[in-house]
Length: 107
Image 1 (cartoon, rainbow, N blue to C red):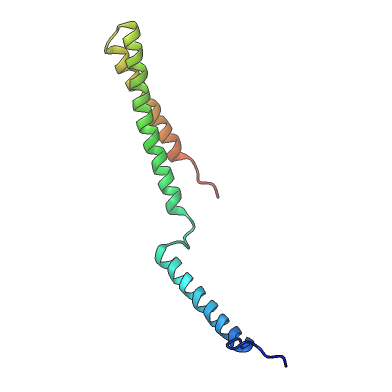
Image 2 (cartoon, one colour):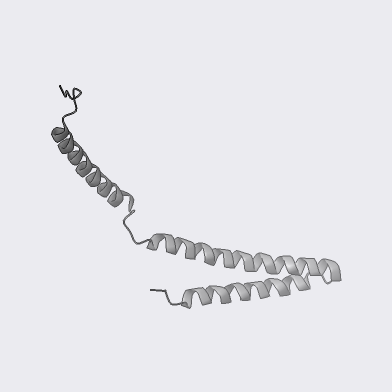
């Protein structure tokens, strides 16, 4: 007497599981389209590039101003070295931004 447990019909269960898997795949595809997860990642790349440009600009300005301010305090030439290094920081920042913007994309 090989009795099976109630509710475990293997043939009907396979159909139900197959149907459930198909519905899950369709739901995942719809969700990917809705959230934009199927894109190639161009948005993330552009976001990182924008953050890099912003970092270069702020870093050049802040770095030049900080170095100039510290040297002015030690040497006593306030505010001349601050201004000189601030302008050097601006020049370096724009040069780096120019290099970033003219770089060919990798494919």
